[in-house]
Length: 418
Ligand SMILES: C[S@@+](CC[C@H](N)C(=O)[O-])C[C@H]1O[C@@H](n2cnc3c(N)ncnc32)[C@H](O)[C@@H]1O
Image (spheres, rainbow, N blue to C red):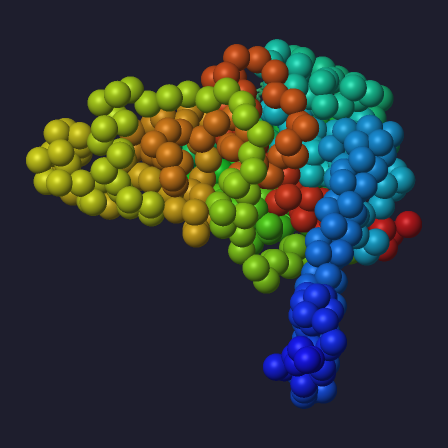
């Protein structure tokens, strides 16, 4: 008696031999091409597993390497950002920033290879943040009105300032230059005259352009141009065009020393726009403010990307109060952001009724680390002060990635001038 395999017709004397044959890793088949396919499939499965293991190992090694190398180069330098074309770690182009806040603009410049000579702000918690993240830099905690920069004459590549914008902001009082803070931009001009940097840069809110029917801006530009030594360009740029998952428009004014004979080119927009899903999925835990129970109940009813218009009418009226009858857009009220869109501009206080930015999938404001991610600060950037001071530093900042793109465009002029 023999035992025959039904698949390949092989005969066996003993049943146990047939059973062994049937348990083979590569099963038998009469059709050779089928056997080939089965073998290919098995190999592919193995390869997928090996590839996964290999990628995991690579990722772990990269993380280890990053932790090891990062502190030696620069607190904020991230390995994945190394790009031979535009990142030069040892470039010694220098800058001074006044009104530096929590350091968004300066971090972008440092990432692009610039060296800070002096950072200034008049608020202690901002200076603590700057000191923590840039321990070897000269930090001066004082009003820019008291700064003496004479020792830096002709020794600085870029002098820049995020001079206060509240007085021009659409969200602020719009008193313009009559407001004491408004005139700090004009004071900045004195520093340009003293230092005579190769390039100066001012960042401000987009509303500066239209304030007082454009008269304020005209006065600022006339003042900056008065010494006749700089070619001045200005534009309103949107951070969302520069690898930042946030719509945030800022007025950027750049002056280039005429004697350099260089024309400044604005940074090129990136092809792809990031959305919240790109930055919100693996954020480290951190502190953050919460909504009141009443507010939470209302916002629970709003879908992703929605706002007050998505609420039942009776709740709309109750929540909006007088604003309900005043008409107009106001889509910022009871606003929940969407994972599939960039964030709206991150503000200094996370809970403002007119400019709500509720987390897309949970009913709460963004935490400190989430807000920092949206402003493209690295996760290891430390913010000092109370939670509300930290929110303020983040909300006031120029997004780091946006600043890095500007820094690279500035570097273009300096490099070609060496
Ligand atoms: C818009 S924020 C600057 C943000 C900064 N560019 C960044 O990217 O993080 C303006 C800063 O100016 C500071 N400030 C206001 N008046 C000042 C003054 N007279 N002297 C120095 N700093 C001042 C504020 O404390 C605030 O941090």
